[in-house]
Image (tube, rainbow, N blue to C red; front, side, top):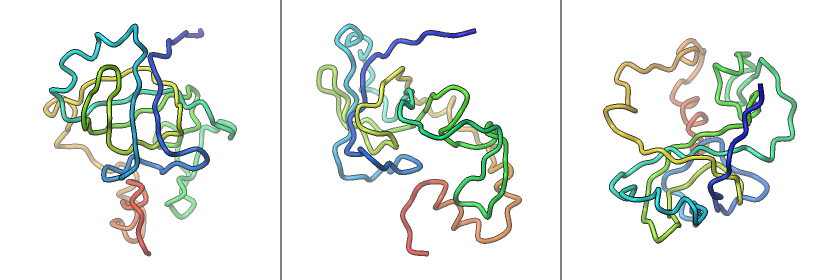
Length: 163
């Protein structure tokens, strides 16, 4: 079965050839979401939230899809695609949590996001503390990796570091 989705806007970032693995909250560059005019009214009261989910179409993938991947920050550990956050998936849908800085008409100024400039926007949903933060969440198979877990977490979060 094929499903048809509508692009409701686009995401503006400084990234044209390389983007981080995860959003970087304190990124100083200009990050914006431009919502198409016909969906502008859907932004009513969105500014009352601090964070939002941004759901987008990953339109620039060049690698083939595999059901097994080895995240680059592991020591060649193989995991299933659904046990990873690899971008090459059966459906090229991405999701990021970003902070709203301000909203001006149909433009949402946000914290850093890990997508290329002009990435198609599919949806926006508010991040709600009690619904979206799970106290008993864990690190899954990452907990079983040997080595410096703190170092691995820096890679997972896409945080630049010197070791």
